[in-house]
Image (tube, rainbow, N blue to C red; front, top):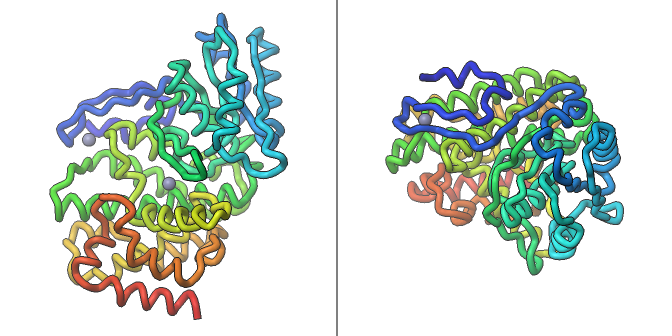
Length: 392
Ligand SMILES: [Zn+2]
Ligand SMILES: [Zn+2]
C-alpha cells in the first residue's frame, strides 16, 4: 500500500493509488523529469505537441540561464517555437497587469504548448494562462527556490494587491540540475527554507488532526519527510552547490507540490510558518516595498514556529511532540546550510515581528500551533520573549 514511498520522482507522474488513509490519491501531472542535462530531452518530452506551436516564456534573466538553450534544443528538433522574453528592465519580473497582458497579447493561434522557463513568477503566469486558455504548460525550472512548480494556485499582482488565482497543474516539470546549481545562492537558500518549513507544517497538520479531527494521511507525511531528510542530510553540499544536493532540493520541492496534488490540500506544505511569512509579506507589500523571496521568509519563520512548539511542549499530545522539531535543531540545520535566520534579513522590523507572532494565526483559517498558543493564553509571553531576543 505504501509502495509510493519507494518510487522515483519520474514514476510518480500520472500515479493513482488506493491509500491506507482510505482515499484514492491521483496526480494529474504527465511528466516529472529531473537530473543533469535533462533540457536536452525536451524534444522527446514534448513530442506529442510537435504539430502545433510552442509558446516559450522567459524573462531577461531566465532566458540567459536556460531559455536560449531550450529554444535551441527545440528548434533544432524541428519544433516551431515562438519565444517571448518578458522585459523586467534588469529587475525582478513582477506578475502584474502589464506582464500578464503582454503574455496574452503575444500568444499566437495554433499554440499547443506553453513552455515557461523560470521559477516562481514565470511558473505562476504560465499556469494562469494555461488555466484560462486550456493550453497545457510545461515548466523548465531555473532555480530550486520554492515548491510551487507542482502546485495549482497562481498568485499574481492585480491593482497592487497579491491575489491567488486558481490555475492548473503543469503537463511536465523539467528540472535540469546543470541550470539550477548556477542559480543565485539566495534562491537556493529560499528553496531550502521552504523545505525546512515543511517540518513545522507537518507537526501543525498532526496537531490539527489530534485536536480538531482534521483529515490526515500518514503515507503522504512519510513521503514528504523522506524527501526533507535527503535535503537536510546534504545541507553542507548544498552550500557548495553540489549537483546531488541540488537534485534532492528540487525533488523535495516538487514532491511537496506532488503531495498537495495527491490529497487536494496544502497541509503537507504549509503551516504556521507560512502564515507568519504571509503576514510579513502583506505588510511589506502594503508599504509599497518589494518583498523578500518566499522561501527566505519561510526559512526565517520556521525556527520561530518551532520555538512556539517548544514552549507548548507540556500541553502537546505525545504524537505531536514526536514530530515537532526543536528550535535549536532548525537553527542548526539552517546555519549549516548558510541560510539566513534573522528577521531583519527579510526586512522585518521589530513592530511587524511582534505583531506577526500575535496575529499570524488570523492570516487564514487553518488550525496551527499559533491558535493553540493563543487559546492557552501563552502567545503574548512567547512573542515578547522572541522579540526581545531578536531586537534589543
Ligand atoms: Zn493517503
Ligand atoms: Zn512555501
